Every structure is written in C-alpha cells, then in structure tokens.
Amino acid sequence: MLRKALVTIYMFISLSSFCQNLDSLAFKNGIDRPSILSTHHFGIFSSRINQNFKIAPNKAPVISANYTSGNTFHPFVEAYFPRDPEVREQLRNTTWFNRGSIFNFTDQETTPADYTNIVIDAVIKEFRISYSMALAEAHELGITIRAYSISRGKYPLSIFTSDETIEWFHTNIAGGEDPFGRRFYGLNQVNFRYLDRNGRTLELNANDFFVGGIELNHFYYPKFLKNEARKLYFNIGHHIGINTSKFNSALDYGISINGVKTIILKDKNEFNFGVGSSLLRKNFINFNSNTVDLGNNLLLATLEGHIEFTKYTKKKNYNALGINYRIQSRFNKKEEAGYYTLTGLWQEINGGWQNGIAKLYTALSDWSLIYTYGKPNYKLSLFLKQDLLVNNAPDFQTGINLSIPINK
Image (cartoon, rainbow, N blue to C red; front, side, top):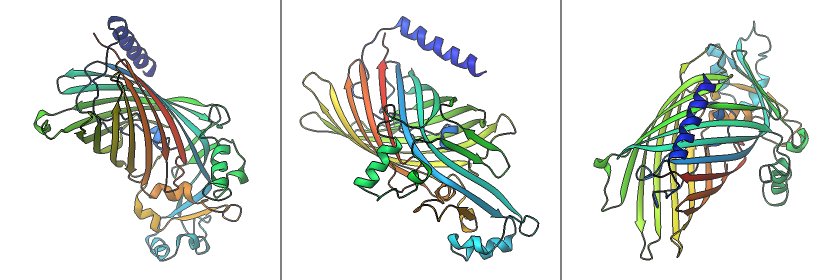
C-alpha cells in the first residue's frame, strides 16, 4: 500500500515537472514558514500539524524539501500508575519524589499498578518532501511524505545538534557542567527504547530509517474573512495523516485556523504577524491492534505566534527574518501526574532523570528563529529551534528548507 502511494505521488510530481517550467512564487505570499515541528520521540510517529501563514494559495505549484535535526536525551526512568483509588489519593498528598518510599509497586498482588519505562538518547533527523497546488481560487491541496533516521549525532553530519556541541555550550556558556547526565551515559550514543503500559515495546537503533507517513492538507482561504484594506487574511485547514510505521499504523485527523496581518512600510518593506491554532485527533482510526501507546491524551492542541520582517533588495529579491513561538498540549492526561511514582538514577546524575516520563504531562513549547532568502525561482529557509523549558524533546534543533515553484 505504502509503496504504491509513494510511486503514485512521485509520478504525479515528475509529470508536473516535465510539463511545466520554473517561473515565480507568489511574491511574497504571507509568512515564510518551513516545517519547524519538533523531532519529539512520540511526535514523530504521528502526523501533527504545521500552521499555514500564507495569505492565498500559491499561484504556481510548489515542491519543497525540508530537513531537520534534533538532539533528544532522557535517562532511563520507570513509572508506576496505581489502580486503587485510595492509593492514588494518598499519593496525591505526597511530593512526587517521595512517593517511591510509600508503596512497593513491584508486588502487584498487594499494590496493583500499570507499569512503563523509557530511555531516549539520539539525534533524530526528519526528511519531508511536499507538493502543493491550488485547486481553485481559494483552495489549496498539499501532499507530504515524511521519513526519519536515528543517528548518534557524530561530526560532521550533526555539527550543531551533536552531544559534544551541546555539552560544550552547557559547560562554557549556560547550564553548568553536564546538568542532565549526558557525560555519565556517554556522548554520541543511541539508546531509544520505550515499554508502554500494555507491554508493547518501541525500540530503534543507530542508523535505523523509516517512513513515518503521508499527509494530506487542504486549506481554504475564505473571501468573507479577508479584509484587503486592513491587510487581514485568514485560512482554515483540514488535515489527514496516514501513519505508516510499524509502531503506529493509524490515521489522524485535524483542523486548523490561521490569521495574518501585514503592515507595508514606507520603503515597501513589510512586517507580517501570524497567529494560528490547531487540534489533532491522534489515532482516529487504528489499522491494527498492536499500536504502541504514544500518550493517552488523544487530542493534541497547538497555539502558535509568528513575527516576520521582510526587506527587499534592489533586484526585487528579499531577506526575511522571523521569530516563532509554538506551544503544544501534553501527550498524557494531566491527572496521572498527581499519583504516578517514578524511579530512576537520581543518585548518579545531577538532575532531570525524571523527565522522560514527567515531561509527557506538561505542555511542550519552543522558540524558533527563521531566516529566508527569496528569489522568483526559489526560496531557501534556515532555522534554529530552542526548548527553553528544558523538555529535552528535543533540546536543540536545526533545519533547512528549499522551495521551488513550477509554473506553466
């Protein structure tokens, strides 16, 4: 099924490329936003949603290639979720790091509990190939194939996201000497293993590669919401993601709404302000019964804000610099954080040993700095993403995007 879908999409894009010639992008079409989705170790197995800050469908079909690399590190941690309501209530009144001394959950007959463990240490790389085209004056369709590789993060392929670079930054600039135990476990390692509470295992090794899925994104740019005098533009998105990995063979469905405000300056340069929100229903349809539990919160909501300044050159090309803030709802239901019991190597490392489980119960947020150089026949974007709340999912991420229009 997947092979046939990939061949069909490839032939469709190749035919379009053969029949059409390069011309120009819609110049300039709102905010330049490559795919800046995080390489989260759960998120890569679901489709998720990229917000759309364009003001209209592109005048010409566009092919884009997006590559990103993120360093994720979580030491081994175990979690117990008691089933007895009275035990849960007692644990709610105890600070989370003291709960392990109250009950012995290894004795399932005395204190029954669900069990899970996780350890994540890898540089995750994502590859996206997308094709988008206008269906009508106010409608646009995008098709995306995404794939992932698991890497140790050695030089020179992971200069900015390697363990050495991140630990050098911690030691010499911010964070202190090895604040989360990377050196204790060893640099440039791959240890990617998760046992869910149903006893299913997700495990990846160095140099593993897999196709994560195919995404269909439809955007509607309604005229009744457009205000040309005030330079206000809106679009509504419908999203279908078909996840194809062996760990999560399922279909996701989502919706999004986005708005853009443009301010044209006296020198014809411009500011663009974007705000968008989306809601994704993970595993709307499961294709088999062996799907790994990648978070029991099946609805993922996101809120995103974006500011971009664009300066045009004498040759009518442009340089754009943008700052993006994105926040996503938690992967697991918040109420469980009130009674879970965590065990880990807290005596061996300085801190953060609990994050592999604990951060599944907090919202994930990050900041991205995006630079784009645009010409009539292509645009190139570079971005840096930083997690300022120390979710380490990932800690630091970089990416590059190349978009090429195909015109009649």
